[in-house]
Image (cartoon, helix red, strand yellow):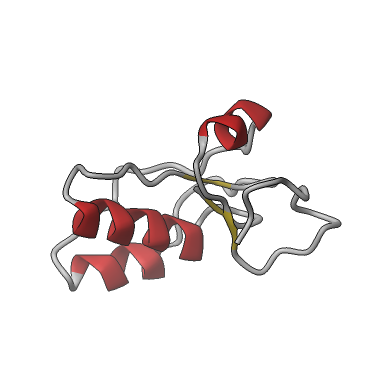
Length: 90
């Protein structure tokens, strides 16, 4: 699981890369504590250049159940004031 405040760019990119590279062996998900209205167009463009389409994705609100189901949680630069401190964080 990848968590970043708005879930609009870096966490969406990380989710897309993990899912592409894992080829079904693992399932990456991402979410944010304050999700944006849409995925950042720059993020869509970057991964599209590598053949990955995230244009249909929408930022998701972080929920405790998501963290509980995750084996590993990666908090991507948001501080404790906007992202929760959770076990499993690397």
